[in-house]
Length: 111
Image (tube, rainbow, N blue to C red; front, top):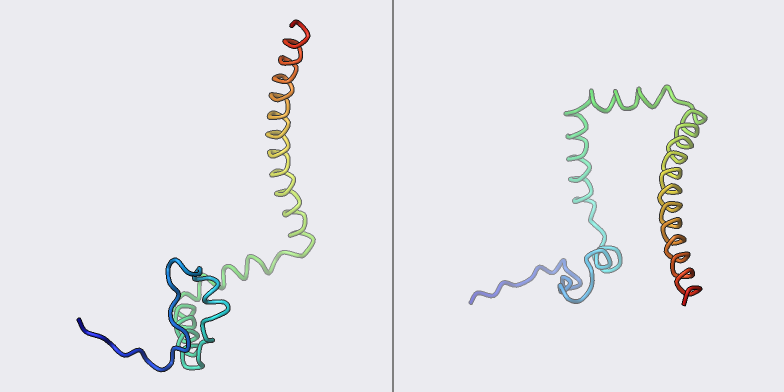
């Protein structure tokens, strides 16, 4: 068995699988990234953005022609469509339950 010495950069041990979730570990325990790692991440992001400039310009052009009122109206229409579907489902389920309760009440009246 070979043992490897941990680097001195880790202040806390890695989380145990059964101990805490990775989200909590990365939010509260894990030390913040150093400037070197942030610079590497930014360089990678800029490299990917530079390799796809046509896609990003077409997305910004599509959004540039819209006003806040246009966006609000589209969101209102989408929300209304979704809510109408949800209301229809709820009404259908309520109607089924109402019929079941009415059938039970009729059985109790006959008994």
